[in-house]
Length: 252
Image 1 (tube, one colour):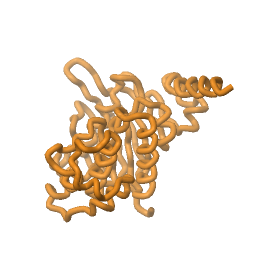
Image 2: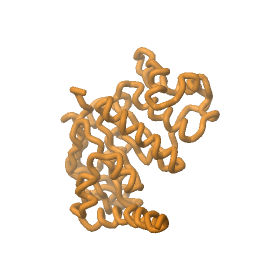
Image 3: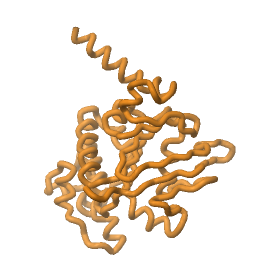
Image 4: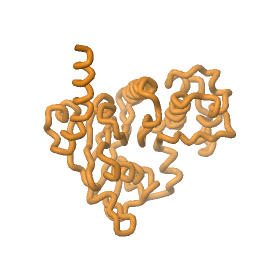
């Protein structure tokens, strides 16, 4: 892949909700084609930071840029059509078929209909599922459809907000690995919010740790496992490490 998804840059970004500061002066650059995981405890500001990229939230101060252009410029709906967004609740239209859901954004934008069968194949679903209603699918199948819908427009920037959080471990692992393959194959820039540190370590190229609205750690998975990303990161890494040791001990 010669061409990658766009760069995303946060410049002194702050977001307030009344007197509460959700994001506090974040400076962060996400390189083209990278896969960045945002991790941290509940209320750390991860999802708020992510949602400012596609203007679902507006910065109180600072700015967000995609390939050097401030996202505040121009139409918010037009911006969102160029960004894939996958989230935990999926948000498929229940009165539409799977195929109609996948083709919805290109249709609204007046673009040619996507190859739904090819998109379903990308996420390991048979073409016949396109005729079904979303309610006829399992949770894992619906989340795969959500991924297919997000890439149907040809978007090269993908925002993933706890996309696998409601799924069982086996399904979660399978979809995570499949998405990572698509990220590589399509040359995407992916930014994922997750509470699962093991998921971040296994899927991302870079992990950004947030606490109280600030970036408090920023490292590759290998650096993070080596304890080079600070105390907050160490505490997060310790959880899957303890679990792995406990499982190993059970095996004798």
